[in-house]
Length: 554
Image (cartoon, rainbow, N blue to C red; front, side):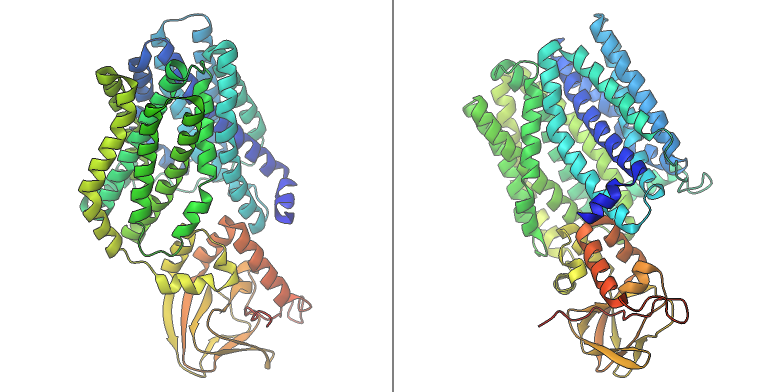
């Protein structure tokens, strides 16, 4: 709580986080309101069309927009993106309010989505230029996650209320005002620096290389295709949510927002399930279980379409969706080459937008052919067929995945890493490099610069400061964190007393762990504070405390 209190005292950071929360609310409120407007002005066909015209530009331009942000000051891009987004939303609200032709709204809708696509990466890129310490960066990342989940829960419900009161014109008008507020919060904040030079690899070359990796590798191609299928299901659900709310459950125009909020609540509750995947060698069971439970739950809504049943089953859909996201991402991390992960995930994002578009088309065809019940049941049928076809290939991917089980268990025994979520823990484990050290070898020497952390896999080491023995270390312990956390020279010498197996972790992934996960940062700070207590500002002007993780008492 002290870390978060410190971050909240950083006024620029507080403003950026509030702006981010408003932007998430804008994204969800605009999406739901436009779907409701289109449904009122042409049924499911119009709702499908407006979804496609919003998503199509993002499918093509999404990876390029991220590279564009890298080449410019993120603060300027963020303000410009919010200005475009606010003007587009105000134009949509005005067009709806004055009864303009539907085509005007459909023309402005893609500008809304492109504005949102620009805003997200720019906000993320601004954070390092605003925070003052690694602790604040950690707090800002975690708070951003909380803000996003809370916004996904609250703002769809708010949009539902506004839709119920005065329809899409009011809801989108308020959304435009939220965009102005988000922009006002970030005007005057540090703009940050561009992270890439215009002369580097061209955008076209980057995209071609990413597509090539996905196309050549069977496991990545399969998992990316599965992501496309799941997003098609999500697209189907987005359209059917409007149909259910308005025409089946009779919740009025605001009902789509309420149903979306229910699914977000299910997603928040999924943490208890996703925690069980930590270190498991096989994840296909969780992935398939999530797909089947999500699609079957949606089909059961058709069997008994009441408000209470729909709320319960859609919450299950949201929970299952979070399980699919975690297990699918983890499997892709395991199967993909480590030097191409970023490129593969950028392609996956575009494929997911494409899947969302296809889902609206499938839902429209299903509703036209057999009504909403057919549309609710058809994803379950497709999922069962897909599971039967893909079961063996997915099991082969799962079996071939290189899960660093030993390294994961080792990290779990070290307090700094013990609280990491499954994907992060496995990611760190993959970055460990095993090294064998003979007895009586000095691993780190007092006074030297430090560029890596060491986890002890086997053997015994002794820690000496100023020639005096201060600690003995063994398996499940680590050393080297003080130099990396505080940027000081090594504060002690560590020697192998016996032959040892050590795992080296470079400075960059170690620092990334601390900046992304508050529990890891808190444990690291507690350890370094204990070691440095009473040893600051020695004769050389540097810290001279012990640097090895002290064994736990008892």
